[in-house]
Length: 354
Ligand SMILES: [Zn+2]
Image (cartoon, rainbow, N blue to C red; front, top):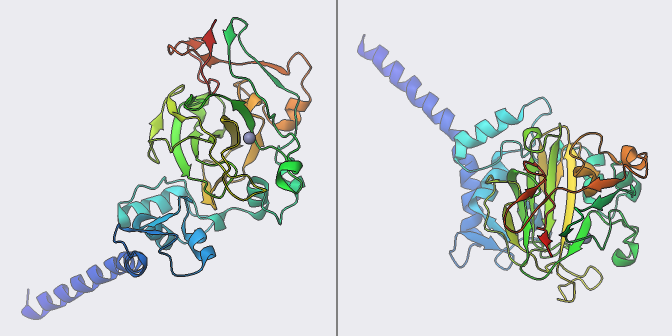
């Protein structure tokens, strides 16, 4: 090979290398630059107090709503722009994983990929009609939990889709079920699954929350199901992407969450779990303003989940006979025994014998 040919090959090699690394460098630079400019105490993150630009910009960047912007979070934001609807989750996840080696669930998509109807139904933001959420399953079904006769279990006080307008100063329905329990009572994983979201919820009535996602194999139900646990006393020590087993202790019950009329935590809420369930035929979801939103998501009466089979949509639940509306609840005892044995689903609080 002539010296001239070697030179040409070297030049091409350098060019290819430069081009292939350029995208990564640009994405990393922007995130790092933002951290450098705002992180005044040098802890590697940006708190609300350190943030110099608008509050709304902060909220937009703080995708997990924990009040801190981290380098990973910012890189994820700038490295993963809205993807075309034709791209698969695997493609996007693959690109991100190669470029940044940051742990991101491959099914997490940018909010721009979800349609407005879904966002309205699942976030129930002020500009959305409540009817949109009702059309996505948020209304009373009349189904009731039926606990094993010989056991004591923690029952529901605030029921599914009850009128919450008086609590919110606007038309509102309760998006889950509440079971009161003493401070510290462990909340339990209702099925095996993966931790997909954690929210400090400092400005949310739900307070400290986590969301688990359950694949069809984990519940025996051919849907992607999300269980959400709220009002923890402290953030569970679980990482995004971590697997949990059915009945696993998630964290302690508390009364975290603001009083929406007062706009702050009052400490007067009774300790309780707020337990909510969403579902979709797609495994994709977005995280936006302290909410996990499944792609094409629906609300489920949590009692319907414990049927363990289809149908479980709200219209079908309303149509059940009175007898079928009594749903036997599978549970776990405090010694870990499951009833019935081998159940894939359990009530999110343990039961006990007299
Ligand atoms: Zn509640």
